[in-house]
Amino acid sequence: MKILLDTHILIWFFNGDERLSLKARELIADESNEIYYSLLSVWEIEIKHKAHPDRLSMTGERFGEHCKRLGFIQVPVEVEHILKVKNLVRKENTPQHRDPFDRLMICQAIVDNMIFIQKRREKYESPLDSINVKRYTRECG
Image (cartoon, rainbow, N blue to C red):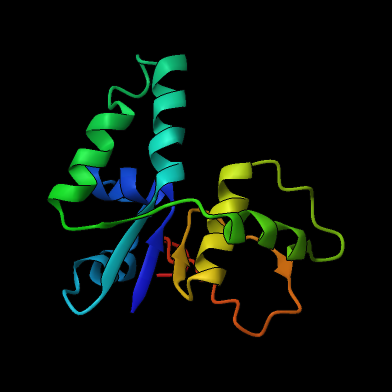
């Protein structure tokens, strides 16, 4: 399987955080799976580190190096990923999703036919049959 990991999932995995379910850990550790991280995660980490180095000591550079050492594959941001955002439609009666990093990573997963493991369940409807967004955290694991 091709699996794209959300930034929080990567941080939890690196830190051995118990909020990451056993199922998610197993999927990441399974050598038959291809594990991907988005270039957006490197950017997000750098922004968060710069704003709050006391809360996040890892820089974007160290984050990217750590992903590469583990054999994770970087997904660049392509125009096709950006344009796919227009197809994301929130389910009725759900609050607005304010995180542009997550929205674009969902689109990367859709376009590149990957499973997306994320911290929270996003409630999108899509006319696309190929949407393959899954979430594995403690509550789902």
